Image (cartoon, rainbow, N blue to C red):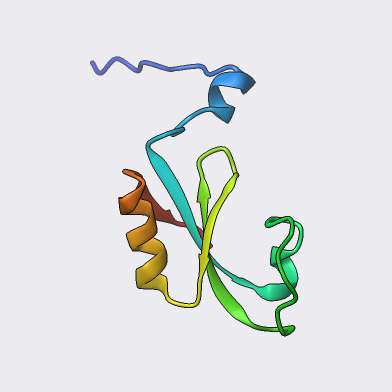
Length: 84
């Protein structure tokens, strides 16, 4: 018989899961970025960029190249994870 072990996380624990370890990589259109990257200069509408976010959602960097965004994660000792 197999035992099932269930781990229950509080909302606070879930919010901090992966913090300092994981970075989320996402391709986004410039129109979506204004709310995520405060102070972002004007970018032509429809421009696609790669955004890297900390596990808690804080923006880390933007790049027009996916490889550069991944390198940015490694430079910050973070494991990049792609989200769609």
